[in-house]
Length: 120
Image (tube, rainbow, N blue to C red; front, top):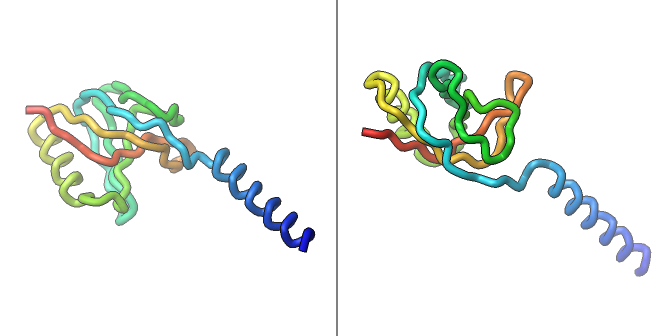
């Protein structure tokens, strides 16, 4: 019985330590306002938004780069947010994102957008 309990404790401790170091936790925060220079739609995986002239977004989770924000297709309301981004680019309006976590791609990590707003 003691052997099974010890294995259970070791397994639980491994899960806790793994979660603490895997990037599951994040700070989250507003990106600040920016004009989008370019949108890139990567198949059905995500849309990336690049800020104009290398402007950086706020980077609450200290991702590897802050000139690009990733909007994963798994986010609820993805199609509507993607349409909002296209409208912002077409009209030259500024946007801001709610960011939470980092998305690993292209050999770096990028802030993940959970929502998008357009400035009138």
